[in-house]
Amino acid sequence: MLARGGLLPVLTPALIGIGCVLIGMFVDPLYGFAPGCGALLLILSVFFAQFWRDPDRPIPKDPGIIVSPADGHVMFVRREKAVGRRPSNSEKDQIERDELTGDWYPEPCEEPLSFQTEQRFVGVNKGEESDNDVWRIAIFMSPLDVHVNRSPIASEIIRMEHRTGKGLRRGPFLPAFKKESEFNERVRSLFKSSEGLIVEVTQISGALARTIIPWVTEGVQLRRGERFGMIRLGSRVDIRVPARDFSPQVISAESKHPKHPKGEYVYAGSSILFRLQHHEEE
Image (cartoon, rainbow, N blue to C red; front, side, top):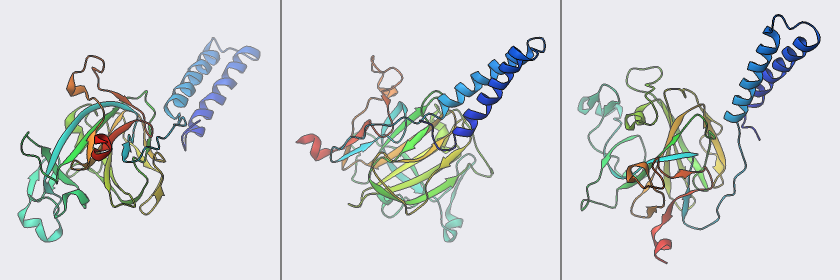
């Protein structure tokens, strides 16, 4: 099964490639150019088919879980707190400027877990935890992974915004496996469940992946594991959830686990990233 928009890129080089091979076999090989060109186009078609593949996935039905929005290796799992946010127009005289990430107001949202606007997060030291902390999981998607993204919970998309680095029409485009890539060109989406839970998912472009394609808009209702967009070529997806309610269920690359040196591999819509703490205790 191919993702939306993938049929034309796969079929076009395949049909031209077959045509070149047939010309080389039955008309004139043109000193080997026709069959050679046909073979290259067929290889290109196979690559596009690999990239645009969109397999069906079994979606877990357990209560109190949050599933992965992306395929890939878990780069890190971190407990964080908000220490700033994007400024409003009335706060422009109190901002902190950063060459890469833009302008910040040095206070988080009144309710940090509402994710009302993009916030600046830092790691939480042991013993300094609070009810306003979040868990963040970063997932690295290589060019060979499935690039279709899925909803982590049954929800409504209440916000979807495109952001770039300061002063850039597009970009920056740092390699997605670097921590600094969190401020690459990105699309931030908020998923709100009927119980009021808000989950923040950020699709981040990489050094190669420069096109994030949302398939839905604000106000759309999604089932858990339903497709909502994709990122072309290698990239990264970050997810944040309230730390007071959920506990992470995956192993990151930073854990240096011998069985998962690159971090646990997770599947969009199928792998459980977080579980409600009271469910875990039961």
